[in-house]
Amino acid sequence: MSVIKLLPDSVANQIAAGEVVQRPSSVVKELLENSVDSGAKTIRLIIKDAGKTLIHVLDDGIGMNKDDLKKCFFRHTTSKIRNSKDLYSLKTMGFRGEALSSIASVSHMSIISNQENTKSLGYEIKLEGGEEKLFEYLGKSISYPQMAKEAGVKGKVYVQFVVEKNGAITDIKIIRGIGSGCDEEAKKAVKNMPKWEPGEQRGKPVRVRFVLPVNFSLR
Image 1 (cartoon, rainbow, N blue to C red):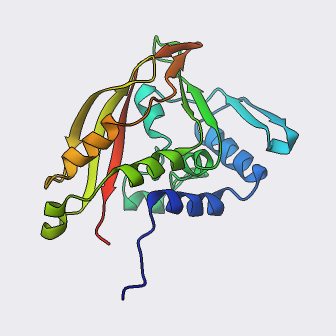
Image 2 (cartoon, one colour):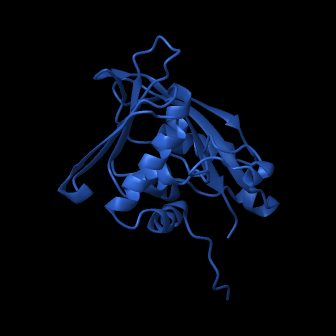
């Protein structure tokens, strides 16, 4: 009987979080390094209860646009490198794209950001309960299609959707699929997701578009 199992994403994220975030000071370190890498000239740090209640970092770095903001919580999303050759010419304090994902998986986290060359007043995105809750929901809601199992089909389905001002999920579409029933299964799971916390712009709810990778792996 096989004894080796592939860990679900929610567990893998918790393990990664333990490697990156060992205590509140680890969170401070990661966030300050992000500020430095963004080219910030001024950085403010606000802490309550030794970081257990609040860690708030404000900086004047390059910032993120709306598209970057909705991707930054996922693991291995980064602006620091593009290919393996970049690993030999690193000039930043971080590059793996794991810090925000790890922090989000063990906290209630929000980011407000904007870029100087845009007319937008900025955007806010929140993760209440962390990325773990999302992957835990997907793990319980998705069934591996029998046709895909028999054909040995595996990989990631990328589902695009919009979170409306009231938190409802709309405009669901597959932007990259793997077929054999997996695309339909991923789309159904996203369609049945509970309401999200809507994005905000200057305290007012706004529509935000997301792209969610749904992983299908044979075990």
